[in-house]
Length: 153
Ligand SMILES: C[S@@+](CC[C@H](N)C(=O)[O-])C[C@H]1O[C@@H](n2cnc3c(N)ncnc32)[C@H](O)[C@@H]1O
Image (cartoon, rainbow, N blue to C red; front, side, top):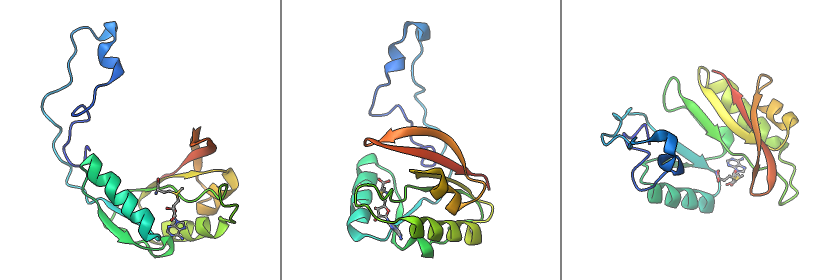
């Protein structure tokens, strides 16, 4: 939303706006200036990509979608933020180590200078992506315990 100069207050209300402590505070009426950043998203499953495309359309966000394996992702700029939600392997009982290895290879080889944020259900999977991955927080995502990990660029 920031990248596209859209106010986070348009089309929704925030509970904190009614807090007495905020008194007569009102959301800003002028939207932030667009940052002019390219937003690119990918998945290797056409159906997953369609769902993501639909969600982005509903949110009014323009994203350049690509059908790609994570082993084949390339940075659209010299620096940026790479955000990923790889499979957890819980629901289908799959061995997902290969996906984390491929993601790690792409990140380390091609996204030099980028920061990364990604979800992983376990520390050892996060370390397959990058040995310096550190956990920012742990939370429940659809009932599954996952960590949000960061790699500084
Ligand atoms: C936990 S889901 C996340 C879905 C969606 N991105 C989200 O955040 O809600 C994991 C996604 O990883 C995709 N995926 C699994 N292996 C992949 C691979 N090797 N390359 C690219 N995408 C992959 C799956 O198709 C699935 O959509």
